Length: 475
Image (cartoon, rainbow, N blue to C red):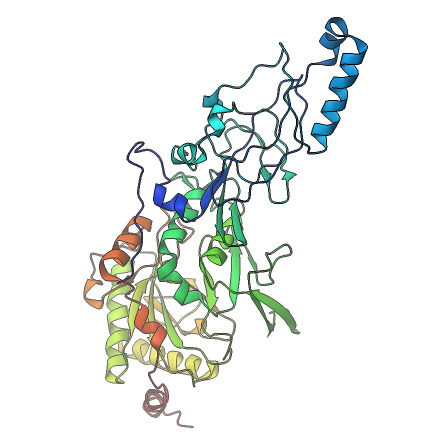
């Protein structure tokens, strides 16, 4: 059984999303600084290198020029100006205080700074003594008054308005993933944020990564959340970290021709979390792996129910028909909710069949069920002509992707594509019964029910020959 850490809360603050365990694994946050008073001059910041740190930059409080002209000599003003210049260059220096500059109260610095660049105001020395204690009080996704934050390389992000939370960071050796705007709402009707998604995928990583590893990955990006448009991106984006592996394959776009594409590979936890940073809600990977890209390791039966009150109950019935038909061919299958409105039945196979053969197998079996159960099973693609549950064999093709098991789907409530035992798939099940909490609880209780899919091993040839013979299409 997979040992998946539960979503926990620190005992001293039940509303906190971070636990001490999470912080110790390398998750940290960078705060967004409050706007400075008009009389404050920024000093260049220093960078933190620790796993969890409050590493505040070097800052300076400078007396405004007008008050200085009335209370100081010109020589004193020149000395203050020289010290300010050194501070801008990143050197360490003493703070100068002005009666017009209010020192921020410790409560204003409620979030931890990490890899901080230029900042506007400084915390008191007392609040900088214990970064771990400050971090334990951090509330990821909480509203913050910090309008700007510096991320990676010390560059300053432009203010995007009040109420932005701190940035998060996970470090594994020299590899770093930073999550910006964790309080950005991706599911507006449910209030589910980018940070919530990040936390879920961090916890479910041990279960989902084996189903993504070594498979070309297609990014489906939701920059504005599920209320906005999405777009697919196959080519690894510019600026992707060097430690995130890619593999080049030729693709054939619908508009014709072909092109070489560098596909990213989601082979570990940091690669998975980096996809969340780039607004990937569900994780879509190929049916084949990079060592044998033309040899899929499963056949997919994608069941799409009709838009009727009992549509999903019909899909449950058809899923069991698919299972029975495969058992007659002495083949084992596994089922999961799609996380959207349908059901996925997967047939793991030995990596010897081609995509043409898996497509043919799925089509022959689907049409056989359509002939045996008219009105309940259909292969009709056009929805206006469709009667019954679509058994979509067309999803079996080179370069096709599937929303991986344990993927959050971009639907209200953030349902998760969840594996089930066949005896659990009853007409009482509803397509969105399984969310992030339920998925994690099931992994903790049952382990990965889809682990056998990774092992494959079933020969497709004998079953394909029997289907051909039954259809009269022997080759």
